[in-house]
Structures are given as C-alpha cells and as structure tokens.
Image 1: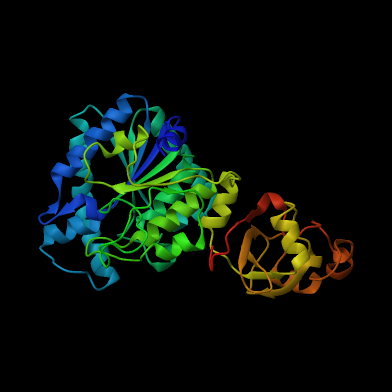
Image 2: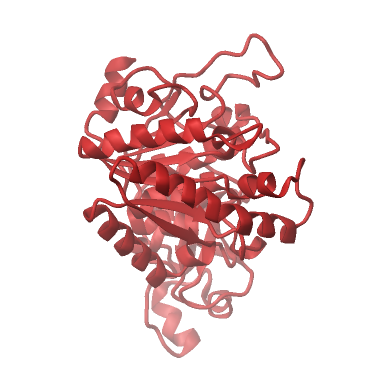
Length: 382
C-alpha cells in the first residue's frame, strides 16, 4: 500500500488543499490552534518548494460565532450576512498566521459564473499562476455574500475540485473531520472500516458515501467523494483525511497510509474537457443511438447528426449539451455547433444533407470530438 502511495504522491509539487468548516471551527468559533498548526504545515511545504493553493470554508461559521448565533441559519440572506461578517475575520486570522512565517496570502472570492465563462476562467488561472510565481499563497472561498442558487458551487468540495483543474494540481488533499471514507457510516455502525485506497470510482463507492452534514458545513462525505470523482477524471489523485491530525499534510505527501487515497484515472480528461464536463451546466439533451454511443465512448469520434434520435431543451450554437443513451444515462457533454431547432431538422440525417436542409453547412459534426467530454461512469447529472 505504501508503495502505491509513494509512487502516486512522490512527484507532487503543486498542492490543492481544501479545509472544511468542521476542521476550522470549535465550540468558540474559529479554532485558532488548529489554524496555526495547519498554517505551519503549509508554510513548511512552501519552504520545501511546494506550490500551495488553499480552498477554505469557515466564513459563515465565523460570522455566526461573532454574532452569537447558534444552530443552522434558515434563509439565504442570513447565510450571506453571516458570511459578510465572518469572511473578513477568517482572512485576518489566516493572514496573521502566515505572516508570522514570512508568507503573504491573497484572497480570492468566486462564484460559479466566474468559472463557467471561459475568458474569466482563463483570467483566474493566470492570476493564480502569477501569485504562485510570486510565492504568495492564494486563499479561495465561495463569494457567499452574493452567491445564489444559480451561481453557487453547491459546496466548497465542488469549488476545490474545479480549482484543482484550473491550476492543474498534482494532488488534491481534502481535510475534513473524519479519518477518510468508511465502508459504512461510522456514526451508525461500530464495525465501520476505513477504506485506505480507492483504485476506481464505482457506483458502490458512491453509494457508501453517506451524505451527512454538520451544523457548520454544507457538504458531507458524499460531496467529498463526488469531488474526488471529478479530479481523478483529469488525472489528479485525491486524499480525504482528518484535518485535525498532527502532521497530516507532511505524512500524506510522505506516502504514509493516512486517510483514503483515490487513484487518478489512466485516461485523463484535458483541462478544457474537464471544464466542459464538470463546470458547465447543460442547456439540453441529445438522445443518441447505440452506434453513436459506441463511436463516442470507444472510438473517440465526433457526434454526427445521423446518430441523434431526439432533442430536448432550447439551446444555441456553442451551448453545453448532454448526450444520453436510449436508457437516459448521461455518457458525455459537449459544445454544440448547431441550435436545438437546427438539430431537430437534421437529426438522423447524413452530414452531406445538412446544407440541403438548413441552407448552410458550417460543420459536419453536431459536436466535434475536441469539444466533447466523455465520462466512463453514468451519473445522473454531469
């Protein structure tokens, strides 16, 4: 087991670390001792030549504590207001802790729309690259004060998975309040066993990731496993581990058996295809026949109009659209070259007839393979 971990992690130099609210907070709000300990560890990594990017939770929990609020907040405005109060304090705590070690930090607050827009996505990547070149540690959080359902990442596990792709991380370390993924919910069974290694993301692994939540966090083990699923798809290993464990980061990178390691897939998605598959929201669905499914999943081909059986939704050229098989399972997502109205007219036809039907033919393919991300699994939604 250690050999696999050492082989997987020994060459990692660009580290994406996500710290959850349950790690950062205690009975009296932010746990300053834990933050200092983790900051010291990240400082040591930076001094050893690692490039560290941090995705942190804790703004809402910090704000709740500062305002003396107990229990869960009920409305979106309450959560946004608590985040507005807590985000400044959270960054101040991080900044002071890092500055004691001679390291500067940069605050970056994001919403989903920052990453779905391709130009803004590239701008974020360039900014993060420059900060790392300057030796500054970026500290990233969702912009909770303005985020609404349409532009929310859902939770910071999802945000961290997307940032891991943006920076092309060598490893994604997700620190939480449990030692890793168990074969059943340890809160319900005293016989639960830690799973040290996940070599392939299967439906069984997803099924045992119980979607439990806490009073200070928005995600659970399910969201962490889904985040792992996304990063391993683009060739990035993921480790879920207990954030309050001493020397947790150093021990993980040394290849010690800490937490649960998810091995990266051998056939990795490119950064662009990952962006298409996991960042963009589908505007519609194309049902394809078995021949087209085989062409996409086994031969790496483009999607032609002849393989399309049905069209759902209203979308324009360039929009992201899911491809589903006859049973409704999503097998791919891509950027279409034609509108939904045009595809309804040419579906089932050979490419040679596109111009005859539409009066023009700018493309032979409905989705070119360069703009098509195929997923091995069949999730309900990508």
